[in-house]
Amino acid sequence: SQKIEQNSEALNIQEGKTATLTCNYTNYSPAYLQWYRQDPGRGPVFLLLIRENEKEKRKERLKVTFDTTLKQSLFHITASQPADSATYLCALDGGSYIPTFGRGTSLIVHP
Amino acid sequence: GAVVSQHPSRVICKSGTSVKIECRSLDFQATTMFWYRQFPKKSLMLMATSNEGSKATYEQGVEKDKFLINHASLTLSTLTVTSAHPEDSSFYICSAFPLAQSSYNEQFFGPGTRLTVL
Image (cartoon, rainbow over all chains, first blue to last red):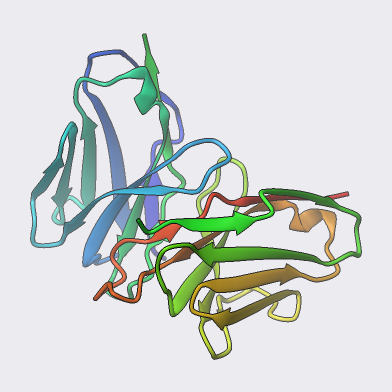
């Protein structure tokens, strides 16, 4: 069955460092991969989308990579700030235009 | 732009009662909206796809008679949890796609509704 794995353990890093979050998937051939941010008690907010034929996408301090051979996406936040603390969800879309979400990884940036 | 609101943000009800949750696209029109539920530390689970002017499409395992969806206009979809029970307590989130968008790549989510059934 299709599976999306994100590290269930929270990632704790120091302010100013680069945070790297991982999204692995199995039994899936996504056409798109998306990353969302979710704050406690709030709905997710779209951050970035990367297509299957793209290796990397950047937006300000954010960078996403997509390796369809490894079946993995990495999400980087450079120069992290306490305000970046949140849960980050990856979502895969196989072309049905309805993405499937991972359970997310909590990021905690310490001042 | 592309703001989605939900009302109420939080609701507590007694077991056996029905609860209606509204999802509105404030500055765009949406023919399609989605309803999700999320349990603590769990991923978003798609419940149903709400289509303006037609019946909703429910995901496997979601009871359509229990979770009534109505998409009466291009800016409003409602989810009614009928005869709610404590196991229906969850965080319900809707999302919408602007009509002008050529694909469904980016969803705009509402802020969610926390339902607690006593």
